[in-house]
Amino acid sequence: MPHEPKRRHSRQRKGKRRASIKLAVKTGIKCPNCKNMMVSHTVCKKCGYYKGKSIIKIKEKSSEAGSRSAGKNNP
Ligand SMILES: [Zn+2]
Image (cartoon, rainbow, N blue to C red):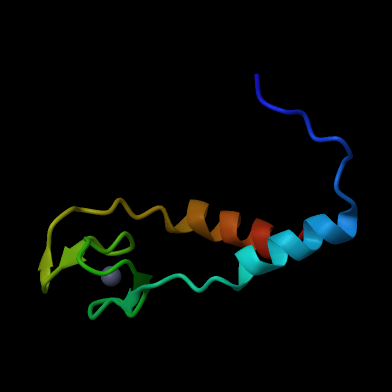
């Protein structure tokens, strides 16, 4: 059986731990097609392009995506 933590960590300690997580920069490159940040050596999630060719077709849900992003920006 695993050990139980003796005490709960304080908010400060939790924040300190999570601060380092947030600092980590995601490695990625700019998509040459849509200039969106993407993981290298993979198909772009936004436009579905890889090496200048469209590999997968992305369904355009502009209205839905717009409302989602707007909701995130305005809490
Ligand atoms: Zn792209």
